[in-house]
Image 1 (cartoon, rainbow over the protein chains, first blue to last red):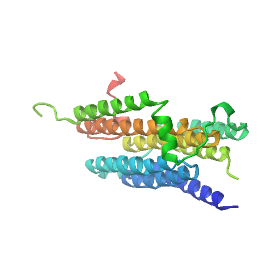
Image 2 (cartoon, rainbow over the protein chains, first blue to last red):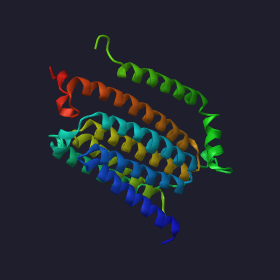
Image 3 (spheres, rainbow over the protein chains, first blue to last red):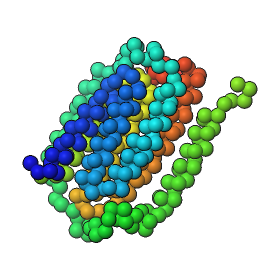
Image 4 (tube, each protein chain N blue to C red):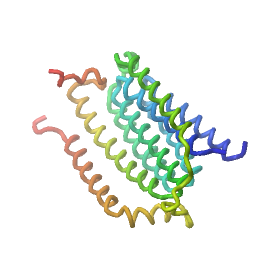
Length: 170
Length: 100
């Protein structure tokens, strides 16, 4: 087993374990912190796949900004009763069975499916570093969606301000 | 040798952990966190295909998914704060005013 395999299995097992802890902890603070660890390990997998730019983005945006936002909101709420209360929903048994069937199907199809290698007419080999590789596609073929993404962020900014605003006379 | 299948299976497992979190937990914060986990597993899938197909489009899509994830988290948390102001609770089964 070479070095890439060791790193893959380390990152994969740690990502699954921390994701499992994140979903099962009763206290949301621990959930958020375990999810930060999970995102770091997934970023490691991104590096193994040669996507360094997105690994950095994953750590900065997902693990950094978003999870801090979640932590702020968790600290806003009074969670003293949430720790003792029942943590699973009434439909949990049925939902668990359906999810297990779904994961079994997905794993079976992933293992059985045959990847016949890249389509030759779609191949664009990475000749430079990863940032210019992604930017080359982002600023030529996907320029319009890129600009629309900024519009989406602007709309979300307004939406969050309007939702969070105090009502008149409150 | 780590192939595409390894990444697909790992991504499926992460996806299902997220789906189970969405369907089984009562706490809305944990449900939103599970949605983040689902989006991350999809990102892993897209990057794996991008790597093995030698095409940058998958990575560009991950960029857009990250944008939408940030938007979804910001709006979801704003709605959650409003909900908590009105209901004093963050459990999904207390949100049943639309039942009629």
